[in-house]
Length: 177
Image (tube, rainbow, N blue to C red; front, top):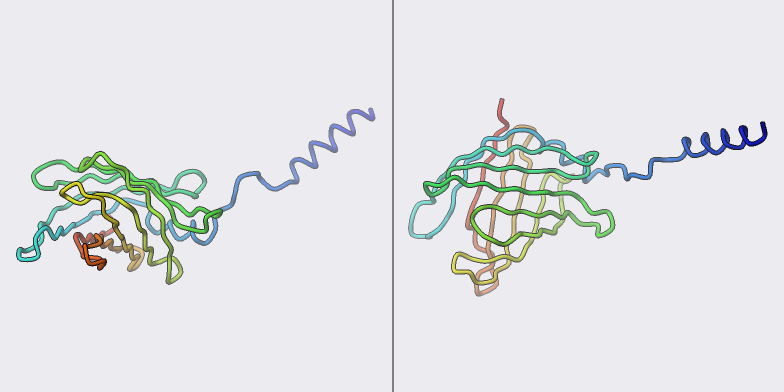
């Protein structure tokens, strides 16, 4: 009987403890507005003397792992070809930074992002090292803005030789109804 009471006490003590898994922070909860299906219009600025190249696509974002990560799946038509991209983004409480990864069919390298948010995490600035169209290493900057529940933007910049960031692409997202 004593063993049974001791066992029952241990089980009750374990069940009263907090879950060993982390709870989403305010940074994680801000990703909720990005979840869903979005239509996207991309404008790529390949040559400053010419109008931007425009393409359209669909992005599906899903919260995974208890709301700690946002999985992104992008499909679009770009330059007459089907474009496919995959990302995983979240907030690392140890690094105290927004982190992520992105791969797509336009290259063989992975973008590993790191950055911060502002305005209650409605604006996110990420940096990553990648390559330009000539295959040269270059630092990139992305600025994501959650305009409202149904609209958001992303602007991509590349660091030029003089150190300034130059806009190379902008995307406008509208939540699919």
